[in-house]
Image (cartoon, rainbow, N blue to C red; front, side):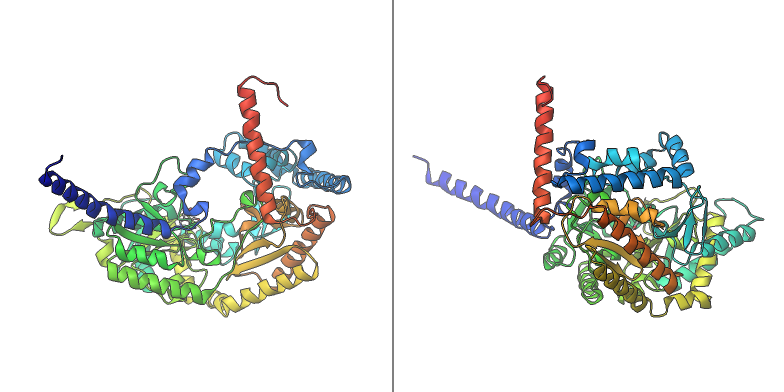
Length: 565
Ligand SMILES: Cc1ncc(COP(=O)(O)O)c(C=O)c1O
């Protein structure tokens, strides 16, 4: 028989353990509830699952009929593909030849060319549709390749190209003249830096600025400062949001290491606000306002168009409310609110996303276009967050350097950009009725797509567009190749992101729409959008799951020494 004292001792132990455990379980549950249900919302699980995805490639026979297309459709697709391949081989010959020559030595190019389309199709596409990754010239809203093909540029140079390529060429040329006498001297500042600082502080309504070499570095620095000043460990990023390729802001697929100091939470959701209101380890919240176009969705690329579904819709009021709610909770909890405006920067308004949404952040990162065409990253913030040392504790510092920060040529090109942003009438005109103009263009585009009977729509956030698909298909990614032959240049993410510079005229847009529609009609005529009866996105997903199981099975058989079936 246990002694009564033993019993009380046991009860006390259990009670203590429960008192210790239960709040932790509760907080863990709350964190789980604040995660988006998609795989992107669970980066660690996504990384684990990514390792289980087996490679398989469709051979020539299957490539044209993975959806069970009948012989007539398969033949139409084959003929269309052969025609495209022929066009590519003749029209892009020089660009393709140089690409083939250089590719083995350029890791980035190998990656982007492999991941242009869903992987089971990639090998066959790379063998036959060699587009080329080189360009020779740019002018107005166009780029020209090595074969003298002129394309409407929908790449936007990853967002850098806001006011048109000629604008940036002039920024760079004038900058080079202005800093010519100092040249590439580093460490000592060219006087133009002082004017840049004054302008960025005025635009951002912040107290201090730091210069970096890329947007990724700017984000690293903003997060590091937030951790330094709050003494807290964790950063919050939202599901799907891109903030550069630094590991802590990319905790899922793509990062070989687990990011232990990152919470990936659900954007535009009350459970996230609850987590921010209750946890004590959160240093900062990173917001990429571009996510307003597809909250909680990963950056849309055609390689992830597996089942063909892609959702996008921008609601300015709803996103503004969300930012206000974030602002309030961050202020209450001493969490640093960081707007990552590296991509959207001055695309929404001359004052950036802060001015556009009417919400003030604690720190802002800029990049891309603010460099006037040269590489850049900028952090602007309140003094309390930006300082890198404690006056009372001289050894307690937050260190940040960078050989090329404040490079004279970059600073002068930036100055050209900033001066024009604030003072140039032509630039001011581009901002007039900006959203209405681009929304009207998107509406016109969608009317044309509807009238043409194409399963395509566009969605936009100001001048950033994405293509969505109204039916299930395994072949939507083919559109990017038809678009290229129609004279529309896309970046390697294909139809996921079309970025317009603000100097696109109505006539340019109409031309883009017509080319887009004619490319869509050609693809439709070639049978790629044929569907089995009742085909839905879920059917495609099931089919892909079955393909993966079969691929694993083949591997197991091969490992066990069985001949290929
Ligand atoms: C929102 C955002 N933050 C950071 C980055 C990283 O900038 P960079 O590519 O200059 O390192 C990007 C790049 O696309 C971005 O879109």
